[in-house]
Length: 135
Image 1 (tube, rainbow, N blue to C red):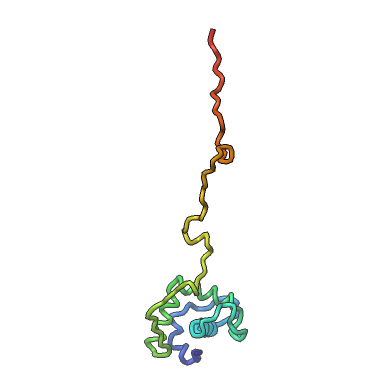
Image 2: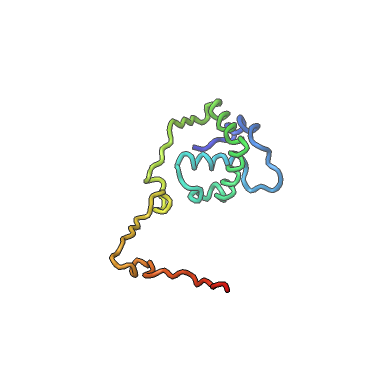
């Protein structure tokens, strides 16, 4: 789904004004964000027609932190341009892999006691330090 320029005009006031030399318009960035949300692809998997994926991700990240993205999607829903409803998010072991060291399980090391104290590493005899006799 892509937003048309007419639909974008309805929500343009909630997005920050572009200053300086920018390579992508806010409309292009918003359409790229919607593409990732709709198709569930990685940022690097964005088609070339949207532009540099890193530029889009950086701007989306800034918008999300400042609340701009939430306001834009709210206005898109009020204008009935986009209907987004997230009911539940589920992650399981097929989505996220954890290294065995990160699971918190104890290591399977067993200390066996042997019959010989030399093998265990304990000394056969203990010697006390020499004491000097006082005269």
